[in-house]
View 1 (cartoon, rainbow, N blue to C red):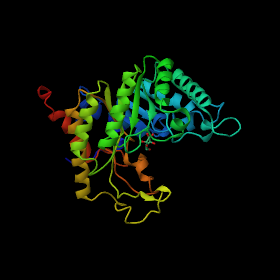
View 2 (cartoon, helix red, strand yellow):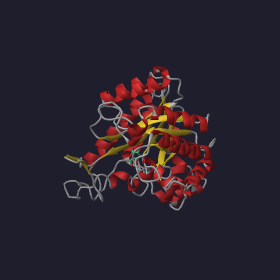
View 3 (cartoon, rainbow, N blue to C red):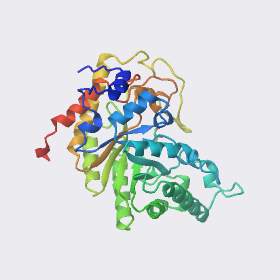
View 4 (cartoon, rainbow, N blue to C red):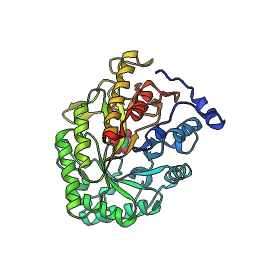
Length: 375
Ligand code: GLA
């Protein structure tokens, strides 16, 4: 079905007594799982009023795209920059949304000083643990009772499922993960605490994640959920791998969250070179094949991909707590600028004007077609 309701209609229709016949995402999945979106500042500050309305209408969970990352919220040793995060949390509370905190301990978007002592030399275990504890207590403590779930540790696994050699791991040791979860539990005993990572559908990395969760559980460490980011392609990971992964995570007895869903529609542009991964390669027509919109065949492929994914989420709904998209409209997506700047990507359910794409209807259909008695 081709749906084309201008975004202004969302605003006007929401303001008037007219109710659109199209069910919303959060209504459609209300008996299954929460539906979330990662928000940027222009959305949660409502500077972009149209997108803020779209968020209120469609989603009942939110994640902060950047404002709670270490470099944003704690830029220098003695400075916390809470303003935008406060505004993000206020937006969620005003709209009765499930508010996610993202992310406490990660190797990326974390300032260099975190890993250094006050002379600029590499920090030792004691210094880094103290810094980790201070950061987690300050940030989680500030939003205690308001942020309902935290991505405590992000991306701690390498592709082969072993622990990634981040500065956290090298300086503190493998137990930096246990420590982070303990500090977070101390700072807000009622918040849900998650481990979050990408490519967890790859069997080796999935096995590493399962082992990590079991390790924490065996040590009596509180862990409430595992987040699989699901930044996916049209053809990868396969439906079978997604199914297997949701099944395996479901057996861990904790919530399974899809935390950063999007479907990259553009050719892969990451090249492995001697120095590692090459990012921000120069844009070229071959790397940016849809500057004027998706042709019907690509639109259909996106629609089918979303239908397949959501059919699997519905199948595993008893384990899944939340499905969150990484962005709201195609205009906001990080995939327009990563790994190549200035491309035109189409990874989400709403187009650049905020209109639902055909994939939106296919997603909604998976909810209405589900047969609860099959559970
Ligand atoms: C990772 C992080 C997110 C975000 C996305 C892409 O998956 O967890 O915070 O940076 O990449 O933007």
